Structure formats: C-alpha cells, structure tokens
Image: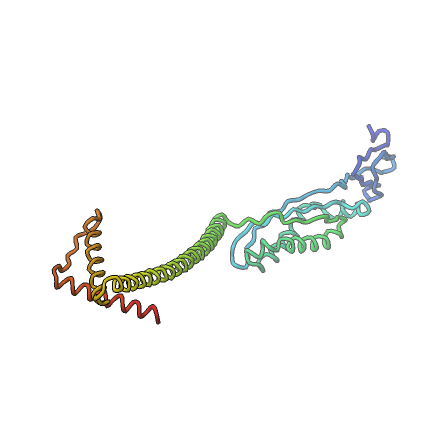
Length: 287
C-alpha cells in the first residue's frame, strides 16, 4: 500500500537504504518518506541500529596442552553515519565477527598456561575488542563491549584440578593440625617440668621438716631423760617409725605382699640404714 502511495515507513532504531535504478541513493531515517517508484527509487533493505550480541564458542589449547572452550560475548551495533558501508560491504556480519574472534583467541590463549588464562581473561577480551574495532570500523560497525564469559576445560581436567585443590587444602589442614599438636605437646612438657620442679621442692621441704622434727625430738628426750645419748634416742625413734610403717602396710587394703627381713639384727640394720639416709639428706639440704 505504501508503494502504491509512493510512501514508506521506517521504524525507530532502524534506517532504510534507498536506491535509484539499482544504485545507492540515500539513507532514510525513522519516519515517513516519499518513494516515487516511477522515478526508479526503491527501498533496498533495512538496517537496525540496536545493540546486538553475538556469543562465540572457540576451542583452543593452552601452553600446557590443555584443550579449552573459550566463550566470548561480542556486543556491537551499526553506525548511523556509516549505514551504507554496513549494508553493502558485508554480506554476513556475524560470520565476519566470529572469524576475527577465532583468530585472536587462537593466537592469544596458546601463549598462556591454563591458570594464567583464567587470570588474564580481561587481557584476552581487550585483545579481541581491539582487533574487532580496528577491522569492523571500516565496515560501519562499532564494537561496544567484548567479554570472555567462560573458559571451560575438559571434564577430566576439571576433575583433576579439583583433586589438586582438595589435596592442597588437606595438606594445609594437616600442617595446621601438626603445629597445633606440637604446641600442645610443648605446653604439656612445660607443665610436667614445672610440676616436677614444684614436687621436688615439696619433697625437699618435707625431708627438711622430718629432719628438724627428729632433731627436736632427740634434744627434748635427752633433756628429759638423763643418761641417754642422742644415738639411743635416734635408734628408738627409728624403731618406732619402723613399726608404724609395718602397721600401715598391714592395714592398707590395696597393699601387696612385702617380704622384708625381721628380727633383732634386721631391725638394727634397718635403723642404721634409715639413720644414715636421713643424715645424708640433711647434709645435702644444708649445702
């Protein structure tokens, strides 16, 4: 109907290419335009100015020979002031962009190891964008944004990477556990050393108190009982302690059987041994 009335309508965000007798004539902006078909003028086609997106999946390999699928997202649009170039110079814009993306990715990724490829996604995207901008501007297209949205290694490679990470974390956990156990053992050893030191002080003080008590007993007995010597008093005290010890061993319900020599001679030997031990302990404590 528009052609019969010699009028055409161009929608918003779109331009139309007008030809006259098969030759480019002008670019029609959005709105209503006169199209005298009898003068050889016609609309050759329409060109959208909207932002478009092309997702490109490219398979390549890294420097460490790992095959990956790199997914790039290209956002582009035609320039209104170069609409004729965008319409006439390229027959398949998407295929052209895809070819440039393949070329740049397959030239960039093989220079990187797999881990570096993940870390340098922005550098790869920038290289793709620069190459596309330089090439597509001559055809009337603007590259708005280029994104590397994903790098997908082979499934076996993914599994291996996860296992490596898991092993590294287990190793770190084992190191931390070992350090913790080391600290616990050090603290336990320090506590045991301190306990033994304090126990030694207690034993030394106990022995000193026993010696002091025996000395006071001997002196008191010698004063109250004339004619007795310190040796007589000491023998009597030791014999008394000997029988008290025998009584404690017999009264204890958890005591094992103890076989010791018993008789007047054995008691004298035991008294001599105890006296000598106490005198030696007193001498060491005083020094």
